[in-house]
Image 1 (spheres, helix red, strand yellow):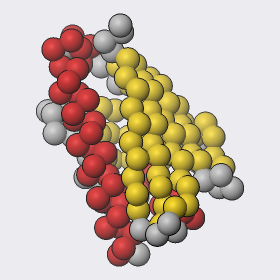
Image 2 (spheres, rainbow, N blue to C red):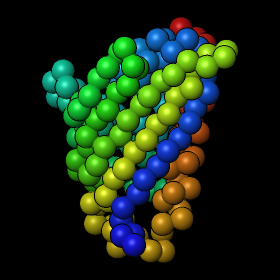
Image 3 (cartoon, rainbow, N blue to C red):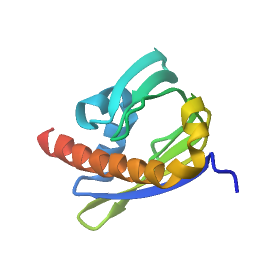
Image 4 (tube, one colour):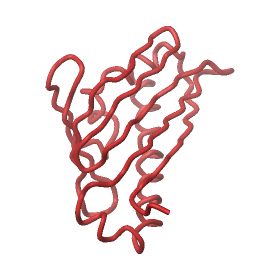
Length: 148
């Protein structure tokens, strides 16, 4: 087992139309406004940005995100990431009764030296940290969409 490799899937159910949810997810520069753990997004160009994340544990993750796939018809967004994590992430927004079902998938390898050294003893904490971050993101996006 590679202790520095992670695969995550999160599902959010939101009471908003799929196109509205997709439009919000498309605007990465707004994430810090509704997602507390997304501390900063700085655009590099139309297809790339740097991002800084910090959740419950006392470390930041800094990544360069590059748009890999964007399909408004299927409401899919995919990005590659490099930096403290290398890999990819994908949002898929689908209609469901009463709103939208959002699936977030991520597959990454940890590159940040401190986290690599703590891979075995910290794995459960890192996974729990990610889960808490995703829950906060769902709550934040729900509130953001209700306010818009």
